Amino acid sequence: MTTVEQALEGATPLAQKVTAGGAPRSAEEMIARMWAALPILTEAEKVATLNAHPRIGERPDQMSARSLQEQGADVLPELDRLNAEYERKFGFRFVVYVNRRPKSEIVKVLQDRLQRSREEEMAEGLSAIVNIAADRLRATSEIRYGKHEIAFYRTHPSRVLFAGRVSVDVFGDNFMPAYTEGDNREVVATDTMKNFVHAMALEYDGDRYEGLAAFLGRKFLEHYPQMQSLRITVHELPFQAHSDRLLSPLDGDYETVELDLDRQGVHGLRCGRRNLKLIKLTGSAFRSFARDEFTTLPEVVDRPLYIWLDVFWRYPDAGRAVDGSTLVESGKVRDVVQKTFDDFVSMSIQHLVYEMGQRLLAQLPELAEVSFEAQNRLWDTVKVSDGDPRTRVYSDPRPAHGVIGLTLRR
Image (cartoon, rainbow, N blue to C red; front, side, top):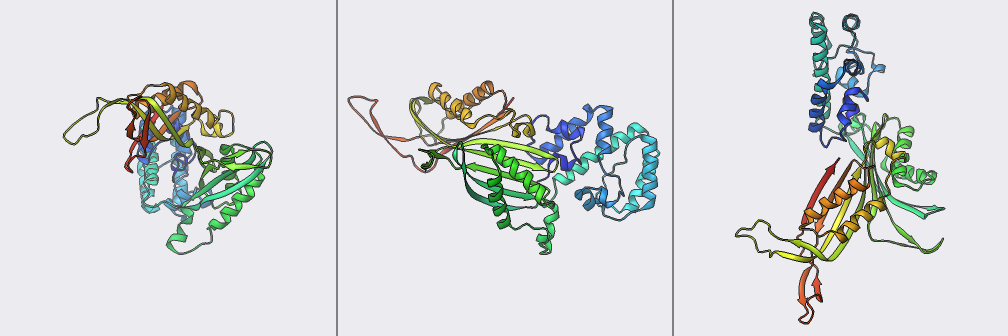
């Protein structure tokens, strides 16, 4: 997983522009946003973006791991002299898309570019920044490994029991030798990760799953310098406390958190409420849909509706949210969803989840995005009373089911 900051050598002005509209969904969207943001950078922001990139021929200890891999560790004194001359003339660093060329060839490129205007060089350097980032984002290999479904059950003074399942995914190109050469010197055993999670669950004294995910991620990065970035996923294991010592597990909906972070901070936070199973006996319709020779489904103006629903949301600033200042209780999201299902007469499940999303964004201004993954588990009607049509018997549906997805952003 390559983040915007890793692709652009830090939280540069260009990186901030790219993430201002929320986390990009794909590498291609990220690259498109970079190109779109270049013309709106101020002069100072352009210079800062260029100067964040390491010099060509920089000492290895001054380069990021990715730049060192791209440029190599060899040093050419001529490059040092030309870099200094370039910076004196233009006021910012020379940036070129090396594209696996030897440094001896880059010397000639730098000499030629010293003959150009400042305006030309600024445009050329910024284009190179995006091309370098695109190459990183489209890399043919991505390193990821970790430990999933680490269960923990921690006694807690207010919740009685704070429990969940943690999944840890570690990212970093420095683990590639384990794949290519069988060299495991940098590899943290996944069993060690499990033990570390259990130790940190004891140390964590909070009661929020978002806080636990951030705590675990930061502790992993502090303790293991070879880890570049992580994804921490936490699924709540809910329990009903009957007293301060008696509990029973709950099989209903539960809270989820997915957090991405690296050594520059938190870059992504996706929270959710999963496994909502809601049944509405009346007040739902499905009619006026497209029909052809393959259509056998009858139109209905009122039907029982049974949906399985996962709801997810994001914040405008993931780092600020995870520190607790703008977090929304997942129970509030569930309450809005349930009330909408109860009082809204929908023409389809698509119609229903859109209304849910609109209400969530209206009632919870802290959120930047909401998304839904719904399954139509509509029961089959098998018997209707002759005396009172409201009295009916339903059965479970056949295994095939409809699915509906929606994402809404401000």
